[in-house]
Image 1 (cartoon, one colour):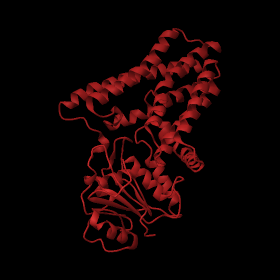
Image 2 (cartoon, rainbow, N blue to C red):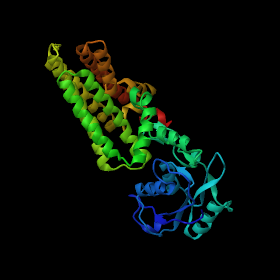
Image 3 (cartoon, rainbow, N blue to C red):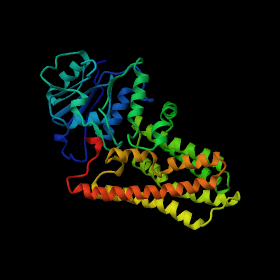
Image 4 (cartoon, one colour):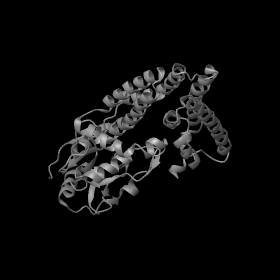
Length: 384
């Protein structure tokens, strides 16, 4: 249990000198796999994501016990924190990681593995070591540090999966998909299915929905569309919990998300003509729905460019409005209800009106932010 697995120097983009970069030791082990990975494999992937290369150089060393699951921001905070720091599992009070000088690395590793004396180190907990606000996931929470065993496995998987969710998103993604997506994500991780394979399947669903809408098969198209939105949840969560993301995968996933909704709306309008429910002023309808979608995306990007944050995380109202704003999933709810009542034509009209409302709300956000900036910088309510 006290065997030292490897020593690796953590290299970041901001650090260019090996002598100033901490190295890393892993001690101990865990008896179970988490999302298809051993605890050591998980730590290795975290180190790789932080820019780790093999070797044992550097004046400082991070020592981590593989019997615990470390949230990645916690590892980064330990790396960037002060020397002679000891990280404690707050629930049990046990020491699980440390940042020390190279000369003290082996004795520290032996102490972590065997319960030796580490009283000379300054103690920290996840709550006092790391920043609680995750800008990428738009939420505020303390990074997790959890003991890994057969008894705790299910609870840890639930905690990690919920932690992989964005705090500010649409109503379906936030309240409907989490439970089924967790089970499918677990099955994919065990089967070795990659996030990019899931994204590719979602692309096929995008095409199937477009074809069905175009030919007026709205119910079948909605089935394919909702399946795509579900997979859109799974691929991102699978990448986060297995630490298996890539620049290509990120572009592939977000590129599909960004591009496909206008094509669905176009196909829906064409399909209405096929089933004998054509919309008057079809061109105007398409301009409103598709043009409004593009305009809102431009508004969001402009807000972020001007004020340094996404508009959805500025104030509590903005986060609430993201639940129902005229994006794909809320619009699909309107279209689904319209098909259920037998009026797919009304569904597209509802989407058009809601798109106009969304455009106005986002325009007001920009104006209000300009006014608010006179009194100080624009910051997220989640970071305060």
